Image 1 (cartoon, rainbow, N blue to C red):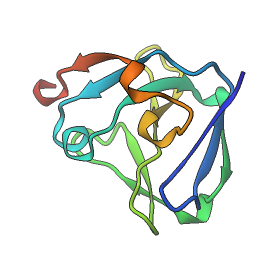
Image 2 (image 1 turned 60 degrees about the horizontal axis):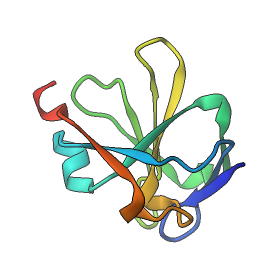
Image 3 (image 1 turned 120 degrees about the horizontal axis):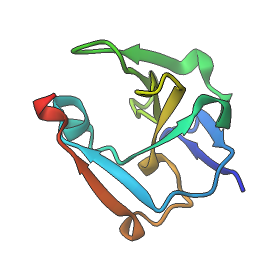
Image 4 (image 1 turned 90 degrees about the vertical axis):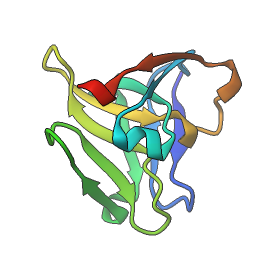
Length: 116
């Protein structure tokens, strides 16, 4: 079963062909900490950008391995693009941008990105 998400203004919308996740990663790196993101990772083949490609801008920092995508109109980062450690193209979906998810029910896994 697929789920949908979007940025705050709705210009950027996406679909993930997967069940809603029950877990999320909370990273304490300098970027994720400030953005407050809760992330779940999916193979790129499961992710479809439904609208808003022209509204997306990229932000890369540190090792430049993660391509953070944010909406130029509202500033929300609905997802990022990267390659998993096993070489699979991956989307890191910001679960705060998925209205169907009850955030309080997620099992949060903490990732120490600050020391990486």
